[in-house]
Image (cartoon, rainbow, N blue to C red; front, side):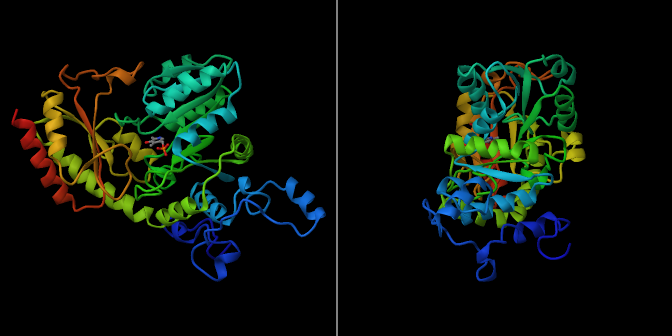
Length: 403
Ligand SMILES: *Cc1c(COP(=O)(O)O)cnc(C)c1O
């Protein structure tokens, strides 16, 4: 195959060419923002025909999307090797909860990685529990305990890599293979690396979920989520989303598609800056541990090198000593880092966290760490000059030491 739809094109090229095959493509670069709830039919016969044809690209009614949303889905599918299609959701969390609802039934058991995003844990302990779906948390770094956690009702495994806040890299190919051997579906929250940095389906997972709110949107002004899968699960996800009434607005889809076009260069730049800043932090005596798989010598680095094609600007570090007040002095002193949730935008953010209350299976502080190693900060490195960010952190450490 030749031309711009060639699947052998490299991902940076596909970021530019994908999602541009609609009727608009000959006339303009970007899909129009196509606002439509009602689609019109030429005849009663056509009205009946269309109903059965539940695919992207087929007009029916707004709940099945319209050209702007289809363009985004098509682009995301083209970037995810092994995907038959991509379903869009109004937020990353909506993608996670809807995907879990699409694969689980009352009486099933779900295994959840202990370092999953906290709202994902709440979906398991709240929403799913209410539907009679049981959950078990497991340590994703302990393959033996994971394998032992399966029972004959285990239907799905919820993974995330790296782990939220604490950034452990687990062996996804092994975890996904064991899930498959046990007859369970594997879902992975791939928001950190995106399909560019971690081809989740190719690495063995069944469903790859991304909070598009983060890197793909990339500009901190839109919320959306996506789930991509091969034939087997894509149709189930699609019907599930339609039954839950999940639709995204064409304006938001256009914003996310705009973000997607530059995601490759943004990720590359953020990763380079994050690596430099993580290395600088590792040398500071106020820092006990840097939690980033990008940094050689850190736990998870070898697996990251083996399985990933890239990284991003998100990582954490743990302060040596100090207390919450000292940590707050540090964070409050930062001028270039905003204080806020989310990440993956063009601007840098800092977030204080204590991970202990949200882990039930993984030890924290970790083995070999001092008991004082508990006050942590997560950084999302944006597109500012890295030396300006380092100077800002330097001022933060001065405030930390003032106490
Ligand atoms: C933010 C985030 C989500 C949820 O995305 P929203 O769009 O905010 O709902 C899911 N997973 C991870 C890892 C996240 O960081």
